[in-house]
Length: 115
Length: 116
Image: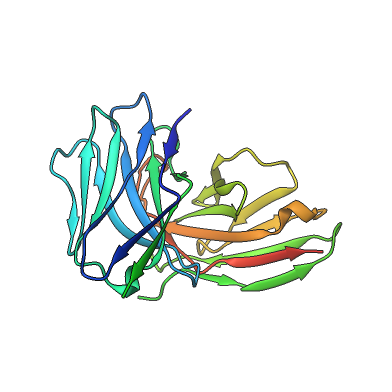
């Protein structure tokens, strides 16, 4: 069974600094998708970034980038120039080829951006 | 384009009752997935509907069921509610074009269910 692990329950960062959230996963598949979602206090789940496993290039979306290490099954999220609005819970999620429509989520990391 | 909408946003029920939650996907999206979010268990997949057919199901008892209509709107039903069913129920839609396609899911604001 696929699993997703986020080992950092809580993190904090000063405004304008950079922070990296960790995620590891376990799968025997070679073709899959990985995602980072953000859930602010409003509880609305918002897509941050997506990575296809067959792509070697790390995905980037403005201040958000990932470090995808397929062999190590690691998928970390880097947030540059942190802003107060980045305060939220961040979830790493996996979607395999055999379970379409199903995201497997990690436990989440609560990120606090301090002024 | 309007996002995923869920109704109602908040619901209070008592044990033994049943409840129906509704999800309207983004226009053009044909797949709807449902998730349960609790502090203890985190986010867990309930089921996915595509083209009015349940394509995938999570590890939940038969009290949890769902359906999808021809306009892609989906409902989920929980019968004989238990205290442990108190949770945030999230639905997500994607524009997948075939049953096996994998597309990014976009989430609605959720329905908060409290069972007393």
